[in-house]
Amino acid sequence: MSNPAFIVDGFTERNIIQAICPGQPIRRTDLNGKNVSLEAMSNRIASLIRLLNNRNYPIVILVDKEDRNILSETMCEELRRLIIAQGINDIELKIGVADRMIENWILADWEKLTQEIPKPESTDGLRGSSKIKELLGFYGKTTDGVDMFLNADSSVIYQNSPSYRCFVDQVKDLDCWYINRIVFI
Image 1 (tube, one colour):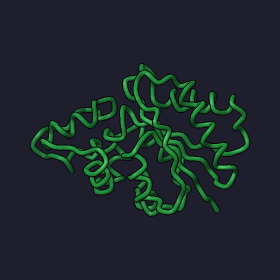
Image 2 (cartoon, one colour):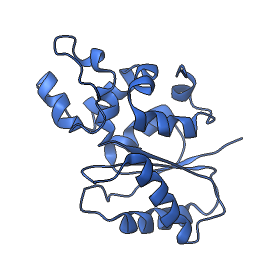
Image 3 (cartoon, one colour):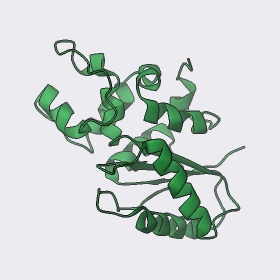
């Protein structure tokens, strides 16, 4: 049976994970932003994994791609490589990179936000939080973002967002009410 720990970018992701996997440890990197190198991010993540002291399995990492000029899947693999290079090779890592930010996953269920404006071909890569604010006229990351994420249809997000699908395919074996409601297509 798994007993995961989560390592995330910031407060929005932390609040979402607290709601969907209550009681599990969550650590923040506090290193999000396009100017943070993957090396710095992997150093911080490896340090946080060491502090968990092998009490949790697997380690689930969720970070934002931001403006980095890299595919989210490539960023996942590069982070994995860099973390393993730090000596973290005895625990399963499940790494997700939201393309561009976790708000892009909310946008993937476009019709939940608006039916008046046509959905773009892809919501991955947009400036997610700015787009939500533009569509609704308001947006608070740590409050509205959590509610919107939890109210979005996870099956629709799975179908519409390649970066979300890549992440969920790694964590679908976790015993978590949120994951259990996704219809895998």
